[in-house]
Image (spheres, rainbow, N blue to C red):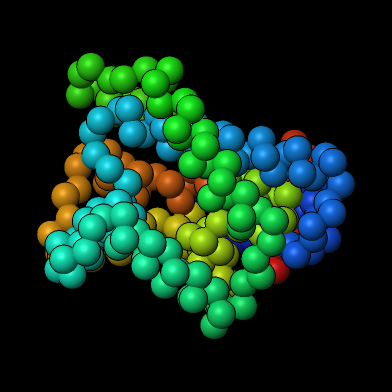
Amino acid sequence: MLEILRVKSVPVASWSSLRPLNFKPPLATFTLLCMGLVLFGLGEALLINAGVGVSPWTVFSQGVANVSGLSIGVSTFFIGIGVLLLWIPLRQMPGLGTLLNILIISTVLELSLPYLPTASTLVAGILQTFFGVLVVGLGSGIYLVANLGAGPRDGVMKGLQRATNLPIAVVRMSIELTVVAVGWSLGGVAGLGTLIFAVFIGPAVSIGLYSVGRLAGSVANHD
């Protein structure tokens, strides 16, 4: 288990793209990228339907909206721009996956929410939240190994990991806990599910990367 949580970089599989900025990837790479993003979206939908707390970044958006007077949607937009600007000093390269991250996840959320279970009790909500976090972690592992560009927040995670050389689980958990703390201090509303996500998403992503790397026969590591 400790080996899984010590993962420090994204594994490279035989189907990984040689570079993120690749708009003509092999069919297998593109298919697995989309598969990972679909799983990511399903995991996010499970978290929403669990009903025990919004995501850390939503808490952050609520806090920014509270102090700025902007709507949550506008706040989320500007936060997204700020996150992408962090890619510059962190030397992260966007790609096809960066764009599809937004398109596929939002589409899967829209289409799947009415059909996924809605937790009716607190215990069911907590269990569904843990399952949703694991699904997000697995989806992250698949789409990141495709190496066609990370989503905005995963790009920051990769950049900070490279800058600090800390395990991905620690870096991601630190990001999410910081976001929750700042959002809550600004007036955002955090629930039990929010804290579960913040604490366990780092290990879940690490498990996803490790599992995909082992199953695909990892041959190297991305920087």
